[in-house]
Amino acid sequence: MYGRRLATVERIIALVSPNSDDAQSVLQKWASENDLPVEMVPVGDTIDSVYEPDGETLGVTLGGDGTYLEGVRQFSPYGIPILGVNAGSLAFLAGVSPSDLPAALTETVTGGATIDRRQQLHVRAPGVDCTGINDVMIEHEPPEDPVDRKISRLQVFIDEEYIGEYEGSGVAVSTPTGSTGVSLSAGGPVHLPMNNDTLQLLGLHTHSMGVRPVVFDSDSTVEIVATGGGSLLVDGGRAHTTLDDNAVIRVSGADTQAFVVSTSYDDDFFTSIAEKLGWAPRNDRHDSGPEALLTDRNTQSSDLLSRARRVAAEAARAAGETLRETHGTIEDVTIKSDAADIVTAADYRSNDIITTVLEEEYPEFGIRSEESDPVAGSSKFTWVIDPLDGTGNYAHHNPNYSISIALLENETPVMGVVYAPETDELFSAIEGAGATVNGTPLSTTDRSSLAECMLLSGYDPNGEFIAHCYESTRGVRSLGSSALNLCYLARGSADAVWEYDTYPWDVAAGVVIAREAGATVTTADGTPYELGQETAKRNELLGSNGSIHQALVTHLEAEQSLQLAD
Image (cartoon, rainbow, N blue to C red; front, top):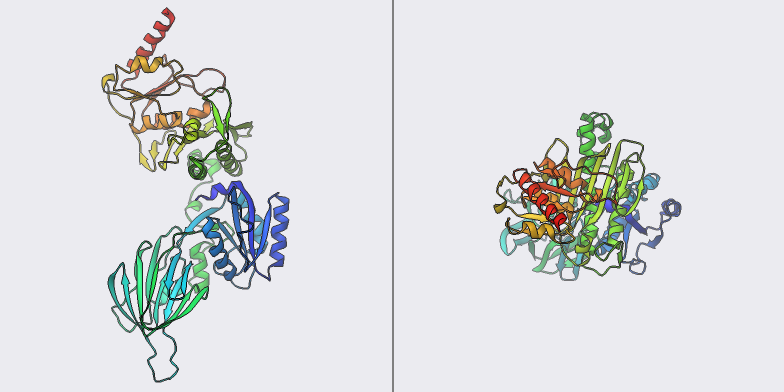
């Protein structure tokens, strides 16, 4: 789940504590000003009656950590991301203050926040079957007679492998979000909780030097046999039970994860830990770090393009997540020009996510998108977007579709990002800096004989290109996404690409990626390909590894001569 997709939030559900009236007023005022419906649900009530599965929902908790933990319990099963507001006296999890709430919400719904996954745990024991986001504490019950045994003896197994006997105050099984203080006091590490899918076993005040913390995968199961009974506590009291002699407790990773919204108004993890645990003072994070070592991005073109690529990649992944979730579902299909030229609701939703993010990050840039009216900018840069290239494939549950985002400088493509949601492949390039897929450098093939080459064809109305080139090559394939065709050329998955006609949004990003991988991109007669703005005019494209380019130009010229003769 990507924070950029929150640019399409359609409603807010707020879980509110009894003493959060002021914070509720702030939230309601902001929601009214931004035309977003908000439902206030008192802690203790369920959100089931107000939750709607369609559209993006943002969960907000107004209270302390108890309210936040209840929000995790209720929002997580629906995959609703949670923004925690500290309307109580003390909170470690709810990080936004009520005074910062309007700004934090604005940042969130314009795609500026991030969403982190948080691992939860599932606990099964006599009288308990629940999930938690922090920890499970299994400790010895104080004896009634002061001369009786005052320590616990616990037998511990992980995936049925015997770990050993823990003798002392007890054990804790924690998530990465669980108490760092408990981990440190038991000789354990500090876990960075974001997107960390592990669990940890800790001995509490153990009487053996050989008992050490154990970190294990969340797919594993810990079994603890409470010899002599004990007390079980989940998340500081969310669930509690007394254990009989030899009771068995099983703890594993939960099926559902929590999704936590982080804004610039939250302290980052290590700043928060430093403050709460009394570590040495740290410089303000806004005045330090890698960003501070870079020259202002507005004065350095390379920095600007690098940041633009990062923002475009985040927007593409956020939109791609939404496309992937709705792929294969029944959608309304609208025909634009002919039966093959269609648009779905997914096109518009993807376009909304991408354009909202880009406008928020770069309000001075122009935008040209296949699915919306052009937006004039005040700078020399213009975004060119195809929010869903291969809509026909998408509508028919075919995985060959993509998202294409390019940046033009004075009408010349200088940066391109193409994302394939079904394979999670992110192709990208900056002019003069090479092309990559998921960080791995791309390069075209070096085949020089047409007979050894495989070609990709875009729209070919009469099938003439396929008919003319099929027998002289190893085949011609038609995948249905111009952007992916150019990326596959860049990766060496094909030796050449032919497009009968193109629109700027179809190929702008792919042209940058292909050229930076070493491809030659021209028109059918071999003249350099130019993007152009005339969307109604036929604009053919021929891309190859370079070695076979002249041979292909000759083939196309021969084909055109035959057409004229006919």
